[in-house]
Image (spheres, rainbow, N blue to C red):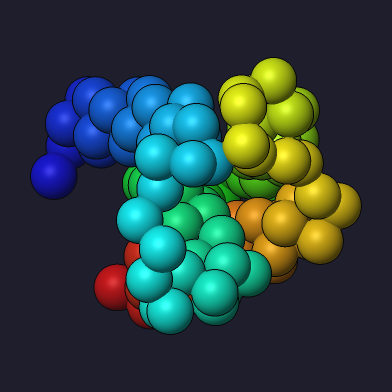
Length: 116
């Protein structure tokens, strides 16, 4: 895909994250799989990291670092946003899982791109 298509996909994914974060806690289904909250955060933000890296040139190190930092800022905003949603809370542990996911997704994407 070209950068523009990845950019549209990235923006849509970020909006989806915020929309899901806006669901009140009592409206979420109570499934046992959702008890693996940190794993879900990690996976969600790994995908975000992949999409972030698809929108930059991996050979421009400063830009890569800025994009990863932007992912961390977005994760922090998402946690802050959840603190205003009834039945939801923000957690430093969720933010840590988000950050680890961003780094993992970014590294995987950069590795795959540089390998080509």
